[in-house]
Image (cartoon, rainbow, N blue to C red; front, side, top):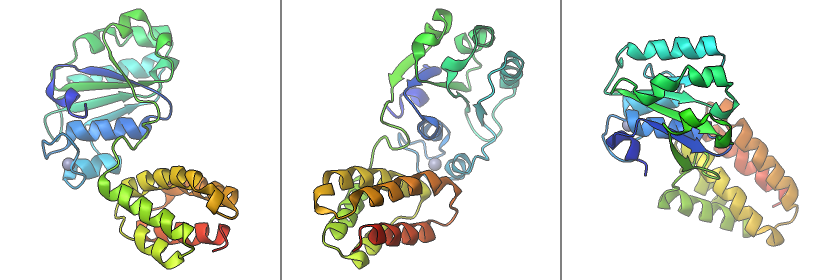
Length: 243
Ligand SMILES: [Zn+2]
């Protein structure tokens, strides 16, 4: 599924679900990645630029007034700056008024061949039929940001949670210290949150620890240093659990 949009002639997809910004960003990364693989490599220039929001060929459209939408569409005649494709992401497209959606009809029907269009929507029924007929709908609920945790991330999660259960802060810190990217950390924290939920009966003060963890997940985007974030999160959770 990851590579479907890159390879096929589908040029407009709507991912359905909530909070899909990270998910959409991941999909854009697949399309723009220089490695040509089905999964984004995460290390090429293109992946890095997508990650730090500096890719000139990735255009986020969060402002849905008709004037802005028309301006954005007008930019699509300019060829990609870096590579083969340009990606337009219209977030929460279902909140767009009819006149803005109408301004997208031709664009979604026949974009330039280097353009890929991503919509995200909570309630796709709110889109006009004329727009709907041009989109491929894919249910992405519950997938935000972490579509496919790798075996390595699952292993890290397991090691971390079992360290918590065994009240071993050092092992917990060691498990989390293997993480190198914000994306991986965010994926692992989601997994840890679920795993802790399953282990809650073995954890004293579980509720406080879970609350702390969820705050950390929210704050992650403001935290530039992954190593520090890992240390902070581990010692915070251990403290809440009173290990
Ligand atoms: Zn890449």
